[in-house]
Length: 192
Image 1 (spheres, rainbow, N blue to C red):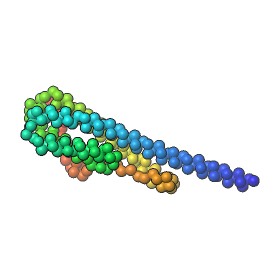
Image 2: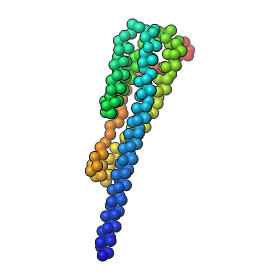
Image 3: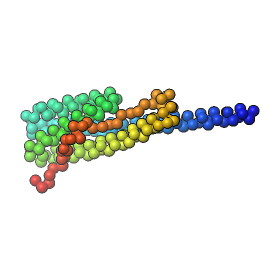
Image 4: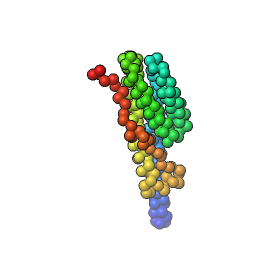
């Protein structure tokens, strides 16, 4: 009888331990999903701002059609990738959109009237603020992915993770070319 109680006690502890591991994995996965939704919110704000920004720039630089086309295409690709739910494709599309936005602001440097336009300056400031929030959201997401991946990959949690289909997530990374590109100053030089 005593052996049966000991075996039941060990089985009970084992079940509680497995439940705790499983719940920890679910909590971490939900934190990763929440962090991704934070990125989503900021990206939506940026997507909504871009058409207004393009229209303002078009008023002053109508012959820069190629730049406008690239920004429009990059925005559409980013929205499509985001809606697909594929983190890797979304990161790639977002990197392309950021790159094309840099070219848009580089074009705006050649038009002093545009740089002096209050509406353009306000949108430029909003975009700069959104970009900063996106960077913070990416860091938050990557931190949660790191924690989740660590849980999924360490022993003994790896046994539970594999049994219940928890797999490592990918980080939201920038492409190599963006690491090499110099940043564009979104703030008007006040000395001019």
